[in-house]
Image (tube, rainbow, N blue to C red; front, side, top):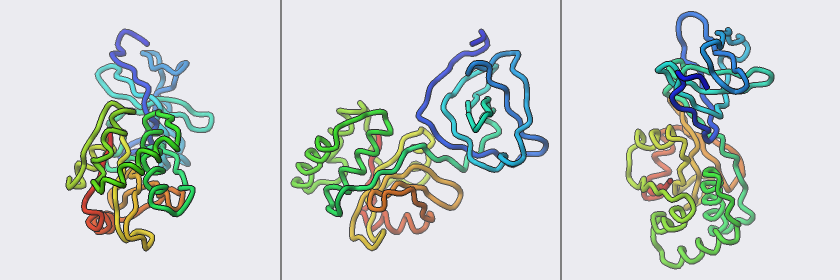
Amino acid sequence: MEKTTIANEKTNRFFVRLRRIPGEHWYLASENGKITNSSQKIKIPEDIKTQDFLIDQISFFNKQIWYHFTRDDIAGWLPKRNIRKTFRRLDVPPKKQPTQADVDNQATAFSILLESAGIQAPYDDIKQVVEKWQATGSGLVGLNSLVISKTHSIRDLNHVNLRQIDKQLLRRRPIVMRVGGLNNLKSSLIVLTGFNRKLYFYNDPWTGKLESVSQNHLKKHWLRGNFEAISY
């Protein structure tokens, strides 16, 4: 990095979209994965301008924050000021629970959460902790020892508003949330991974897929889950 680069950070990967702005969208060419004073501005092709960009690195350069992306044979740096604040989706692969049992739904949700933090905890170990937790009848915060022991962090998001949910996702931290009535299930856990103006994106262990739900429907299902949510 050049001297004008103050910080450079590898990050949990996430998707962004470009703001609607007058003029042309551009990026700075990547030089061996770096941004330098000689990096040239290049126009973003029209056919990808409205699509998602996968970000894998953040840099502070010339008093600005930059996001590094790669797409097909294109790699470069996008200025943060040209990124939408109303869209974020974390690159968190979904997983399908091995059985229909509640314990597998819960263990799979926390397995997704821990893997997003780079933790490869054996599934059987997570399931064993969840089984002991089930016997206590406590809420999701009763699993804080599992999260803290692996990530050294905890965030209790019970009864917070959606703005605080968005802030946690903008921090690149997925959220385990208890919901009721989703997929006609009385109670289940999902993993929130993103949002836009109207929708929330989530990994559903029940289906093993990335799904979406409107803000109003999420609030309704979360209410039925007693507004429980936890992250790290």
